[in-house]
Amino acid sequence: MKVQQSIIDYLNRILACELAAIDQYFVHSRMYDDWSYKKLFERSDHEVSDEQQHAHLIISRILYLGGVPDIHTRIPVKIGKTVPEMLQSDLDIETHVTELLKEAIEHCESHLDYGSSQILIKLLQDTEEDHTLWLEQQLNHIKTLGLEKYLMTCM
Image 1 (cartoon, rainbow, N blue to C red):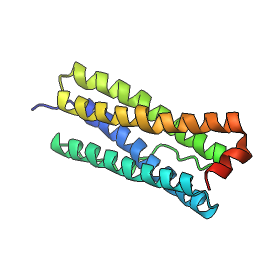
Image 2: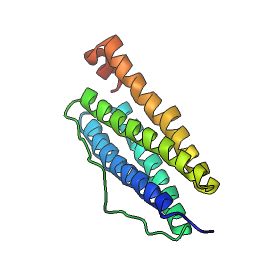
Image 3: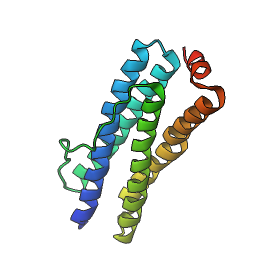
C-alpha cells in the first residue's frame, strides 16, 4: 500500500497529544492521590491507561505504514494547581485531540486509508463519549454543588 506521508504526519501529531495526555493525567492523578481525593485519583489513573492504549494503537499503525513514531514531540502539558484547573486542563487537551482526530479521519478517508480511519474513529469515540463527557460532568458538578461539596464526594 502506498502511504501518504501526510497520514503518518497526522498520526504523529495525534501521538504527540496522546503522550502529553499521559503525562498530564499521570501528574494530576498523583496530585489527587496526595490530596486524598480517591475517586479523582482512580479515574485519572484509569485515563493514563486509556491514553497509553491510544498511543500503542497509533504507534502500531505508524509502524505498519512504514513510518517512524515521533515520541519526542509533545503538545504543552498544563498542570493545574486546583481541582477545577486540573479538570479544565484535561478537558482542554481532550477537546484539542477531538478536533485533531476529526480532521485526521477526514484526511485518511480522502486518501482511502480506511484502516487508519477506523483506528482514529475508535479513539474519537473514547475521547468524546468517555473522557470528554466525564470531565464536562465533573466541571458541571462543581458549578451545581459548589467546590467544597463536590470535593467531599471525591474522598
